[in-house]
Length: 268
Length: 173
Image 1 (tube, rainbow over the protein chains, first blue to last red):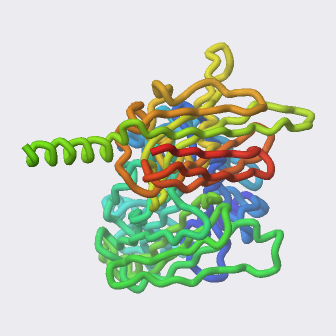
Image 2 (tube, chains in turn blue, orange):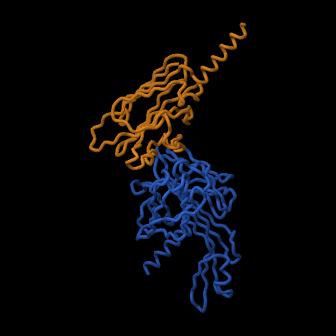
């Protein structure tokens, strides 16, 4: 029962990390500036505090690591514990890696013979797996991304190409080229098009050791762009999300979109 | 005849300003002797910086080059400013630039305007940047402004607090 509750908590966090009352989901890399052949280790967790694992781990089923040449990388030593998941990645290529947990799918709940049923899957499988006469059917769709970026040597862009599904971040300033006191510019896309008026929250880690949350509330302009100021060096968490009706299945009325990223900001 | 003389003078002038023939740049830098339990020689980078902080010329990079030890290039990123401003784009080692770490004491770097490090440096205002980073120690960066090749002898000095001692730059046109 406890495990079931935990799984639900994780799923909820994955689905709607943008709700203001929800916990924060994050990936935390051991380094973001590195050199070829070096290893990084990454923590994946859900918590209220940044970046402390004290609530539930993030599941790694949907982990997608993109190498600088666009190929997929398999994580090593993956482990899910009580409070966090962990995995290692060897940076075998020069350039920028994208580490992402992509949660994309449909969720249905309905009644069958008086019993409450839940279903999770893709639009293609919906018709064959959910009964056509399902009662009290409720379907929702979600596209959520939790990302971080790591570079061996010179920063590159190839791994950061958008898939044009859901909310994505396009670097204007490279995400591994961030320095305290220098503003960084990012562009956000919604299904491949500039996401204007997107509300974005940016927060520095280390919340356990200060009294204020120190959230920066930002909004993208007409081009989907915004500028972030990093007052101090450290790890930062960025989150945004929205809901719309652009679902891939007629029965799904609502689509929930979210995007989370962790950045490292270096001292000058 | 007068025209030829003028032309010769003009060519000489262009030639000297482009390659700064005869100009020299000398850097005297001190790696301080530190009384610490665990001492490692610092990684150190010296480069010429444009006014917009981009890199104009690489002068020296000292790192752990001993092939019998762990690959020393993995810590070059700890020379944070140098790494960001071009270090991360270099293939190590770089002939005439990189070398092994050096002990505490005074070190002299001398470059002629015709040396390959400075041959491409256009006349203008620059900084010499010296950055040092030490394992289980700190990091420090100093900037010394100068004009290249300038019209008269120039000297700039700076003094570090922790990882660098006195640094003196002398430029002779």
